[in-house]
Image (cartoon, rainbow, N blue to C red; front, top):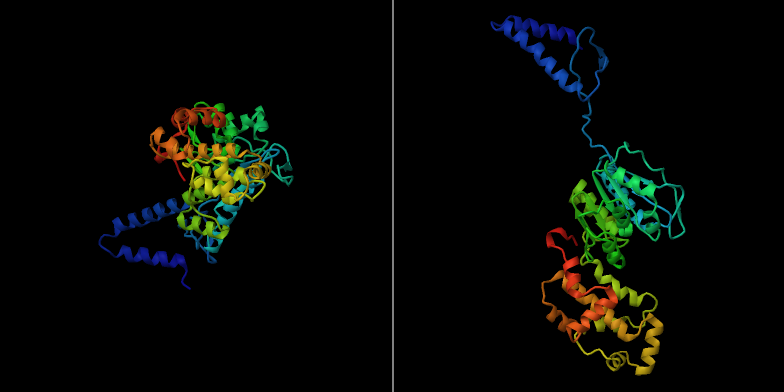
Length: 396
């Protein structure tokens, strides 16, 4: 093998025979210096190259494998005592599956995920304890900060030290996200001020009351307002995490993860479809068929006799069995379903209230107003003004 120094000398000798040798002799070292300076920004200079030494000659070095792979994004998930287990593990698995996808494509993992809490193990509301790292220092690297929800969120929101940490830590993050009722912690830290947000359907009114400057949307699966994201109830955290993966890595990665987890990348409908129907079915499935029939006939005269006939029972037997199965009287159940349907029309359409009254079977605006006050402590017009959002900011 030819000595590299001899090759360089031969090249300089060749240049020296050219009529323009003087100018070229000045250009070659300058070119080498320029390349060397550029590469030193990316790689360290070796003392040898493939075993050949270059004493006294500082040459540019090109690595065998270019180091242009992206660094993993650091994600922290904040938990607290009585956090909802799925609020933590749902998004965690999405990011883990995204890392698996990257490996299968011959790429490095894209995420480094840490569970953090004030104490460890942190006991979730399901009774399962999770090992967590201590709360990170304010200067530690961070891309995304996520906050779980759960029955302990209101107690956590009263923890001044935790709220102060969340406020400071969020300033380091590129984006902040809440899962389910984790939005209450974001609100306590002042991170929802002047923004749009969503939480579990059963807690939307409470979140709006505690955060008057926040526009709380009741139906979206998740909402993004600038660098602040929030999701609806529990499993919606998976939908939000998939959206983050799609933003970070692309649609192909997100759809691959969704297929791996056997979930929708973007599920149809919003969370409002799950509220009243699930409440009525939570203990007994005896009247599931009747509930479906009611939902299709809300504009009809749903008297006790009509419901009993549909259920193939006597009126007396129907009232007794229905209350035992659902915990509600038939009249109260119908009212809940009518209010729910009216909510969706108020938020999702510009339909006049008079038409909503007719479609949902209230009979009169006054009847609907009273039903809204019983169920939601607000009037239909106030509900529409308070919660209705523009389509551009609502993601379903």
